[in-house]
Amino acid sequence: MVNTVDTTAGASEGTAAPRPGYGQLLRTPGAWTFLLPGFAARQPFAMLTIGIVLLVQHTSGSYGSAGIVAAVTGVSMALFAPQNGKLADRFGQRAVLVPGVLLHAVSVTALTVLALSGAPLWALFAAAVPTGASVPQVGPMVRARWAALLGSSEERARLLPTAAAFESVTDEFTFVIGPVLATALCTGVHPAAGLIAEGVLTLAGGLLFAARRGTQPKPVGRPVGGWKRADGSERAEGSGGSSGSVGARVSALSVPGVRVLAVVFLGIGSVFGGMQVSLTAFAEEIGNPGANGLLYGVFAAGNMLAGIACGAVAWKIGPRRRLIAGYAGLTLATSGLWAVHSVPALAALGLLVGLFIAPALISGYTLIEPLVPAGARTEAFTWLTGSVALGQAGAVTAAGQLADAHGASAGFVVPLVGTALALVTLVALRSRLTPKAPGRVAARGMGHRVPVAVD
Image 1: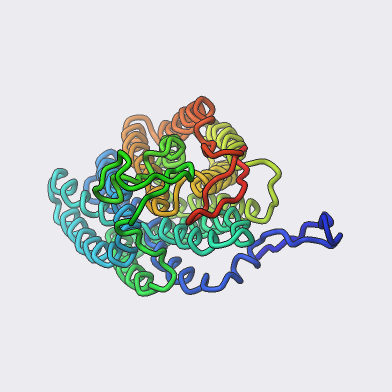
Image 2: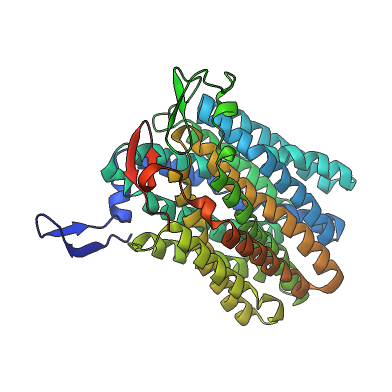
């Protein structure tokens, strides 16, 4: 763990002030009660897409078909994830998570059986829909727990960017282990072993995380008296808003910045999806299927290392500028993937691509806290997660078709196109990522306000 110290003298005492770091973050009371179960519960997420691709490609002989089935799963997840997040904000995480992981286990089992029995493509689509819809949104739930835990005071609120970095590192650590594990199981044990392991681990980890009820954010339920806008101002009950559900009155998607981030995160999804399919096709082309897990692991390791570094730095520029810089670097790094034809060179370039993903992800998630009221943050985080899944689904489909028709090199064009389009969107709409609050102050929790750097 990295815990650095700011050597700048304090204004009043002339002593060194501690800089928020991982050590201080992990000493937050109550953090470990959800961190360890949360890590176990999210671990299978990185195994799902690659498990589907490897199984369906084995049974159908087509990367295109495998990519489409994986894409249906991703689209379903993207559509249902925000609704799951909204329900978790309203009724509590456990109430959504328990039935979700049970449904996911059943759906994954059905998809596996259908694929092995040679069922038609439409039947695989039918099973892929509930498989994606029931993917537990553990990452957003953990982030919502951090926001609730750290947003209770100004002193703890300084740790929110570090928490975002820590969660990115945790996510990427799962993407180091998950694809390698799934590939090893599919190639060394049985083509269905990776997907079966994903279902079992999701069920066990999800139930374990759901049992940690003490740290989950308090359900919003039906508010009494009034509600907060995204800019922190209050609106009285009955002053023109619907008296219906909380989701109808306080929706994360009503915040312009969340809509921009949701579109921008499609580009990150295009990198994940394009890399998974194209690396798999590349490994098959060179006659070394096992290289797929290694190459994707190196790519994810770059992301993890960058995430560790991002959390250890006391940034002097705001998350909005860091997001733009991260995307610019990501676009540049993906521009050479299609031209690489050796394992060492592809591993080196994949590592570079991974190094630019973490800054973009961390900056985007950091922007959610000042933009979105506390009662809608789980939903907001799931919109971003869903966008990544949707971008991944589109990329898996496109890269699969291109790899079938023109080889793995053509599939690597997908991450470049996706990140370039996202960068253009981000630059054009960057002004919407500024919280609309007087004096550049954003609401934090129940009426508590602290200055927020957004540039």
